[in-house]
Length: 313
Image 1 (cartoon, rainbow, N blue to C red):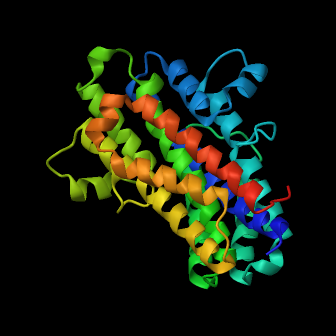
Image 2: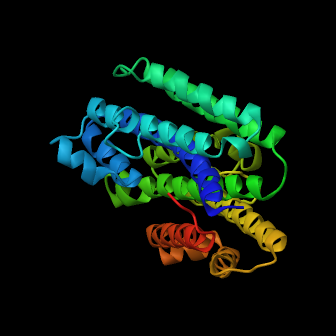
């Protein structure tokens, strides 16, 4: 496969996942702000920091308000991670690799772009926000359904899964980091009712609340929630699941192409790191330290994949 085609499939999938992930991050910030109404500015500041766009935001605004933050994350074309920017980039890449996609996948991507572009023409108020965030999630789910239901399981499919797993892992890690990096008002809140409410908010932001309750009905604690989101191989948004999907997809490429590249060595190292950890060892190391290291390694793997498979952007 040409590097340009592989890169188009990879970035189409990453940008689609990013649009949904940004919506989920907004939802997390919105819900958390409701539980700490005394200082909503700090919640939106933490969301923007976690999204990696605080510097761009600060260059445009001098305060952290819900209206500014939500508009910046949803509609601002100057923000490369905004929903409108992500869905636009996803469609551009899908059009680039149109002949590698089934008709159903292309139509799902194109319909998502048209619908969300129309929905985001005007600023979104608080009453409209939950419905719009749900609409974003539904449209990205339609694309995923088309990919899984109509695409051949070959290198085309593998590059879409690599893009999805890298982006999703990055997002889950960043959402977890919201909790321990800037979320709690003080150390005394750990284990409190406020702490538990915020952890449940994190679960809901990655659609994990019901799945977690099924598996941990009698153990709802920060440690059990963190373990579920980081190490549980059954949950498709956990760091461990995303890492395994990435490992499998890269393995299929190595087998199909008969070539092992440096990115395969990097995923082996990350996979072994994940297998060595328990939630106790992660907390001993420091959750923020672990998450920061994971995000760094995840990004390094992504950059190496681009280099190894000669993506052209």
